[in-house]
Amino acid sequence: MCGIVGYIGNRESQPILLEGLKKLEYRGYDSAGIAVFTEQGLEVTKTVGRLANLEGRLQGDPLRGTVGIGHTRWATHGKPSDVNSHPHMDNTLKFSVVHNGIIENYLELKEELMHQGHRFLSETDTEIISHLIAVEYEGDIVKAVQKAVRKMRGAFALGVLTEYEPDRLVAVRYASPLIIGIGEGEKYIASDIPAILEHTRDIYILNDGEMAVLTRDGVELMTVEGNPIAKDVFHVDWDLMTAEKAGFDHFMLKEIHEQPKAYRDTMRGRLSDDGKSVSLTELSITPEQLRAINRVHIVACGTAMHAGLVGKTIIEQLARVPVETDVASEYRYRSPIITPETLVIVVSQSGETADTLAALREAKRNGARVLAITNVVGSSVAREADDVIITLAGPEIAVASTKAYTSQLIAFYLFGLHYAQVLGTQDEAFVSHVLAAMQSLPEQVEKILSQAEVIKKIAESISRHANLFFIGRGLDYAVALEGSLKLKEISYIHSEAYAAGELKHGTLALIEEGIPVISLITQEDLQEKTLSNIKEVKARGADVFAVVNEGNEAEIAKSVDSLFAIPRTLPLLTPALSVVPLQLLSYYASLALGHDVDKPRNLAKSVTVE
Ligand code: M6R
Image (tube, rainbow, N blue to C red):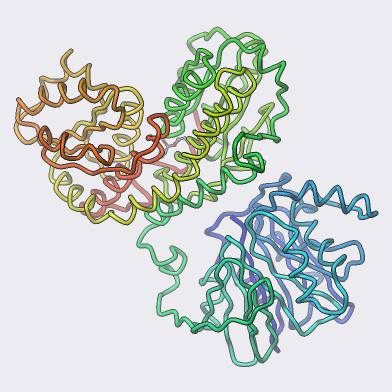
């Protein structure tokens, strides 16, 4: 997730921009840069790597001036590099832009601009924005930005400067956050409050489709169509730590709440214009090559492996190709049968997990084609795989993975549908039906999140137990495994996830009076069977909490002690919803026990050792 800072005032802008960018480091980034109006004109310094690298470059050659924009980039289009870093300029070097988000139709726009003779230096979608604005400029930067924005599709927050109007800084928000800071004789823009908190606590929060024109003495607010708007000033009374977490108590809770956005971002640009089919233009594997694949192996660790278990069902159901899912640390030592007709899908949030990387290399050594699903552009996994689907969850800071897991599910749905389209295993109507249901998922997650208090109460009660069980069948079992891992890693409560029908083969011996059993009952074709298994644990005194589909509450309430209903979706899509109450359950259980939610004991965010 990129970070934007901008300043217009009477003080030197470089230190303000650098300090602001440091406050946005928590968002994750791989390169950084600033543009400042100096006596020579609009000058840019940018570099790949940490902000310290940028500071190093600026030390010998500072950019002096009182108006500037700065950026930390988290790569989405094009690898992390000096040239792909922001700010980007047009060919005349008169316009400079920083951008957070994605321009969906940038390839189309880039081609048009190239026909008009524009030259591009970077692989980014952002660079086209500075060119578009330059093309539209007729003496008024505000109008030029408005015209350019009208041509762009996607999600973006922009900071724009032009050498022709050095006393104006233009900001636009369209589905990526941006705030305006108000100071005496100086104004700011930023992606997030911490970046400017030391300078001002009075801000305007831009909504989608709004823009601001900043001068030293004022802020003009309007829609991107140019209609003036009025806004109340928001006074921030949070401290810096709270501000970094956007008001949430922990990064984990913030990331759980970011899932609707992560779903939308991961889907954005990967559907046809009418939204009825999948278009994974980033894949280089041809339809012929995909048709030649006779088996799929999914390999990953921890939560990513649990996403892979769901991925197995998705691909098997949609594309009707046999899939095996393996733990990466086991895969390469079990002498798996890998041939050039095997597609190996490695899944990794960080893209740096040593076991997953080793499995990827083993697969390549054996001639397989490798597709990576990862959250980090330019990571080792992304660089070494033949094809990559980037999940656009944004940086995940909490050790316990939440939004990365659900974005991996979205990537699997997209890939499964793409695969089905290529093989012709599902008709167009079905694909479009699934895609329509997928587009409702973000709102459905929002609905679940709005009922977090219900889960909190259940969590407080289970936090008093030393052991518990998660059970489910089919996809519910795959989600149970993830729910159990989440609970273990941050609450340190021992739990086991069981295929509900397997309990009677041994584990039932552990069910005793009062033990909590979390049951997932969202796969309705298996509902009766799971309810029979629930009877088995109830008969031995278990306290059963169930996650069910809306509409089934009354029926299931007869068999369980408490329940939570998730909105209805297609059976195949339920994992993207049913996992959310389980994430909240582990979060609130950990909180009730007083643990460090974001940094649980004995764990690291990225495991780069075998
Ligand atoms: O970065 P990766 O997705 O490759 O990480 C894999 C696991 O280490 C990770 O999912 C781990 O299980 C998380 N702590 C789970 O919340």
